[in-house]
Image 1 (cartoon, rainbow, N blue to C red):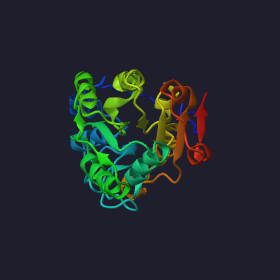
Image 2 (cartoon, rainbow, N blue to C red):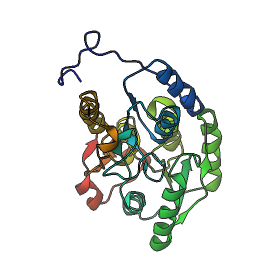
Image 3 (tube, rainbow, N blue to C red):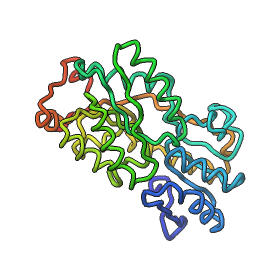
Amino acid sequence: MRRLGYEEGRNAVYEFRYAEGTPARFPQLARELTAADVRMIVVTGSTETVAASQATATIPIVAIHVGDPVELRLAMSLARPGGNVTGMTLRVPGYSAKFLELLVEAFPKARRIGIIGNPQQPNFAGDRQLMERVAVGKGVTLLPTSEATRPEEVDAALRRVLEQRPDALIVPSLALFTVSQKGGRIIEFAAQAKLPAMYTWMEDVEAGGLIAFGVDVRALYARTPVFVDKILKGANPGEIPIEQPTRFGLWLNLKTARALGVKFPPTILARAEQTVE
């Protein structure tokens, strides 16, 4: 924002709100921001964006990363959103399928795949259905979801994971499971259980997670000021196309792999965007 000419305290004021790991607070926080008469709301994640859109139909909303905005009824189309929401979506056709395909390729001996997630998260059901179809084609079993809808439910969900005796674990992209909240607990659990786990953020691998496939979220944050600047200069958010990621990364933690006693196949190593030693 500074590079675009915005300096906090001179020509820009930022109001921050954090749910502190409690998604149920999103509607309240969105209402607080609309009551504060802000010029724009910048949000991360699907649930947060939905909450903001329900709080206001007039204040522009820039989503740093959101699920399918059309399916979530946040936009009429990606090319022409038509409302007050624009930004960047993580939804790319086939992403969930690729996610599971890479997991099976990385760990060919894994036949039972566990998944810990929040079924209330937008797009979760569709992602799971797509992965189930891939699992059938690959001859592996995608186990029932170990559900956690709040951070305090994560430990119980992890106990259910152990009861299922999976060969590998999927940790999907959910705000509930960020490293700063309960993601660190999941990484610790996977290490203690000697369970290969696949994540969606590079930050998870940097924090000790084994493998991740997804979008570099830091690149999304770097792109966000472009949307903000356009709107502040008069552009209509309903006419600013919602962007899709064009590049995905694969991140590996070799130190964690050694601790788990697993080796990545050469095909996976060759495709890695970054490895952590």
